[in-house]
Length: 261
Image (cartoon, rainbow, N blue to C red; front, top):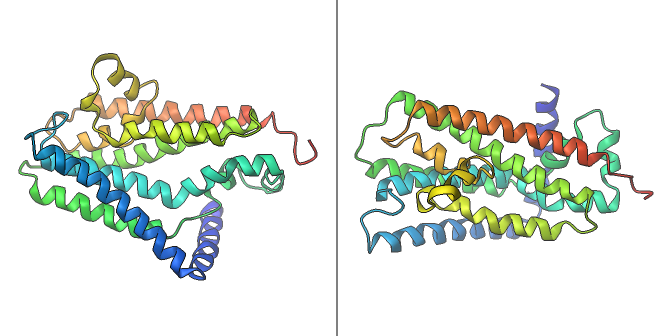
């Protein structure tokens, strides 16, 4: 509960700061909405020429997009700003202050700043998801809803874990911003249904480099092909990814020499 109280305090500080620059706040909201519009436009164009894309109908594609937007907007709200700032914490010695606090340095490093403007994007994401539900003509059962909600948590944890692993590269490189840019480019894989990948690539994106766990697998919980095996795989991969991120961060942190280095 002390962690929750700390986060609420950090959130209030960030909200107060963001409200001082309302034009910038509005611009951030606008950029997020444009990004969502571009992603939707891509699928709309595809469905002008084909009744199915990557094995998904139009309604299923909207459910996938809604799931993707929800996970991505939550990440943008809670973590993304900290992810991009992390190399600066290491290079300038600001990490020293995190290590001196009686709180997990991993928590302070990735949850210190909250992008409150992205809260609007969270609402937009649920609207997109609602559109998918309104045109979906197949029944969705309670077990599927439970799998989807757990999938949202799993997708968010996987994305955070991958960012924590990539961010930890800052302990090894003088400038890790290039590694972050590469990760963002690779992250585009998660923005497409995993049905477009075949064979070994699809298995890699589900297990070894689980980008498909961010949105494709959670969204599939609402489709007719959802299964207990897929649900258990989602839970297992998420657990292993989070464990790897925590272990790698702790190992990389040992390379940190402080501001005096």
